[in-house]
Length: 335
Image 1 (cartoon, rainbow, N blue to C red):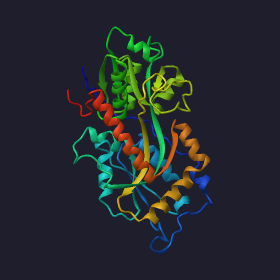
Image 2 (tube, rainbow, N blue to C red; image 1 turned 120 degrees about the vertical axis):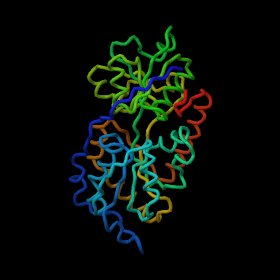
Image 3 (tube, rainbow, N blue to C red; image 1 turned 30 degrees about the vertical axis):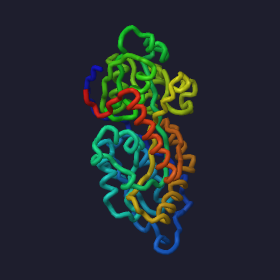
């Protein structure tokens, strides 16, 4: 398989959760506890994001921070610490005090896909973090230019020439989804990995690649503008923002790969503190303003308690490992 590396700067436009503070005003904190946690939190919470400002994880974290003062009674400043697909920030937070004040926005791919692409020492393990709750899912969609002759998966299968396709980078859900689909469907293709969604989208629009798999939030403005068209989506069910686009499973290939985001903290945090945090975040995500934020960024609700998140993500990791083995997928980027 021929692989070309074409780096490009990350430039996803930031989004805001307008109205979250107003929507929560007057609600007060919901974190009353007992004993040592009765006054939690009594100082600002700290949210560390392992990705650049303006990216999906950063946008989600800042939307939560908008509602922190009213839900928790304290501010929640956001710090960006990008690197290693989020691992640097998560490992840094995991090494801090497990007092409930140190939080991170954890993406599922870091726990389900990255361990297949890096060494055990570089990967984040479940022994390092606890999950408060998951928040959203950000689905991957396979796109082509609006005037492309490719309208369906069958068109790619029937192609006499290899299909050039863009992914959002080595060791990402975009890469895994597309490689697994092409492997199972028997599509002959040449991958061109980029360093995030926007440059992969630009490559599709410019004809540098014939198709690409990016987050729906990256693609939707161009889909709505009629510049690109969706071919299929990799979620388990049709996405509410693209109700007419079939899933890969509907096309005969059960390959559910999506990006989930959750709030996590150092392993061993007191359960009462975790409960207090979950109550506060549930208050934030129950507002109309949060739903407006999700709609504006083409995100889908995926609110699940922390213990269930860990179980579900571990099951996903096993399934993704099977994809990699079945279709000889190298997520480490080696030729």
